[in-house]
Length: 309
Image (cartoon, rainbow, N blue to C red; front, side, top):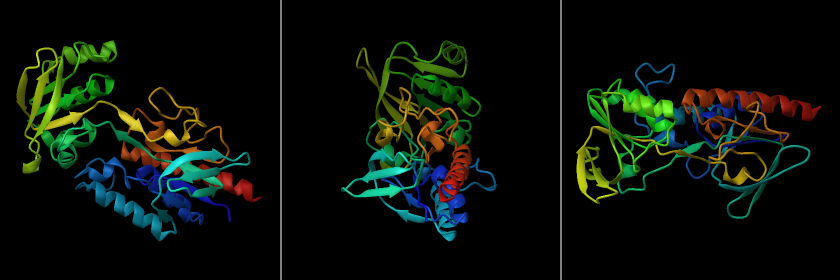
C-alpha cells in the first residue's frame, strides 16, 4: 500500500487527513511541536461556518482530529528536521532523534506561527485581551480602546479593520515612519479613530496575574521615557514565521519563508503538496486553510492512484 504522510495538525492538515482517510489511504499525521497550531489558543471562534454560537479553538481542532481518526487517520508526535525528496516521488523525512520516515506522498501543512513580542505574560494573556488576528477577535472588543503593534501592511489592515469596533485605536510603532505601502499608511494616518505612537516599544503587559490584559507598559525609544497605556485589547501584527525551514533547500520560498508555488497545492516535486498558511501570506483563515487541505488531499489521492497502476 502506498503511504501518505501529512505534516501539521491545524485546519489544513486535519482536513487533508479527513479526506485522505475517507479514501482508505490511512494517512499518517505528524503533529510536530505545536499540535493544533496557533488556533488552539483561541478561546472563541465565531467565523467558522456551522457553529452559530462559536466554538473554542481547542474544541474545534479536537473535533477535526476525532473525525480524521474515525476514518482511519493515524497520529504521531514528531518533529521534522530535514527532507530528502525521492526522484520517483515523495521522499524521506528526517526526524528529531535520528529516525527517518519514507513516504510515497507528502502534504506539508505545517502552518505559520505568529511572531511574538517575547514579553512575560504573552502566553498567559493570549485570548484574554491579547490577540494576533483582528478578523477573528476584533468583534469581542466593541467600544473598547484597542492597541495594535506593527508597522507593515498587516498592521495597517488590522488597525483599519478594528476601527469598526473600537472607540479608539492606538497604533504602536518602534520607528518614526511606517514601512507599510503608501496607500495603506495614508489610510491609517488619515483615519480619525487611529492615533499613532511613534518611536515606541511595548516593554510590559498588565496584568497576567489577573488573567486579562488591561494596560501596556511603553517606552519611547528616543527619550527612554516610560508610560502606561490602558487598553481593552492588544493585537500583535509584527509578522508571521512560516514553518517551512526543513524544506527550504528543496522547495522555493519567498523572502519571508512562504512556499512559492504556481498552482497550489502542487509543487515541482512529484508527490509533494503544500496546504494552508505555509503557502498563504494573505488570507490566513481557518476556512481557507481547510479548503487548501481538501485540495491537497484530492491531488495526493490522484497522484497515488497513478502510482498504483
